[in-house]
Image (cartoon, rainbow, N blue to C red; front, side, top):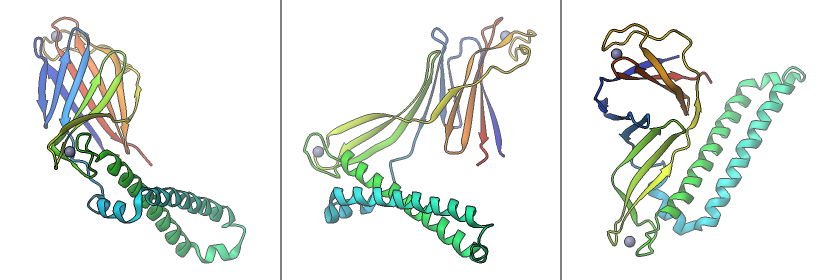
Length: 245
Ligand SMILES: [Zn+2]
Ligand SMILES: [Zn+2]
């Protein structure tokens, strides 16, 4: 399990910090932390083949492949569970252990990935329509997208802004989408207030709001918010932890 801890320090009067290409901005009046960084240009394995596939098969067939692949992967997963159930009951099941496991898991991954790719083809086709000139596969990103995470007292929001531009008519169409990483509030750390790094006053550094936890793929990121009651120093700690499978 990997662990990674970062400290972002704001001496009294400081509101903005840059670290490793990420901008941290603190609004002391509203206790809102804004984290901004660049994301990746939208891409997926079959992106370059999408215009050809849509042209040749149409979006109805593409959607059918997506749904059928998804159900096949579920069916193969059910077969795997059934196989383990029969393993100790039927002698023959034991003999074909590895060929069965490798084939079944390989096919689950294949059909699941196919379903995911075809779902992206469908979305990309829909989203590539220029609102001005009405052509499909018109939009290209003219800048890297900006990801913004806003942690306020009430909520934690993650959005991505993509800068689309039509390659035919030049229409610019920036779009903001929500990124739905699973988020929750954690608990305050169960320990006494710490000594402030800035003014050295003992017990002055308090964790002044509940930590934010976001879960993306298999990494949990915990952001904790500290404030010195004596000198106004603020500190944010960011801890990344790989989750066990
Ligand atoms: Zn256009
Ligand atoms: Zn202090």
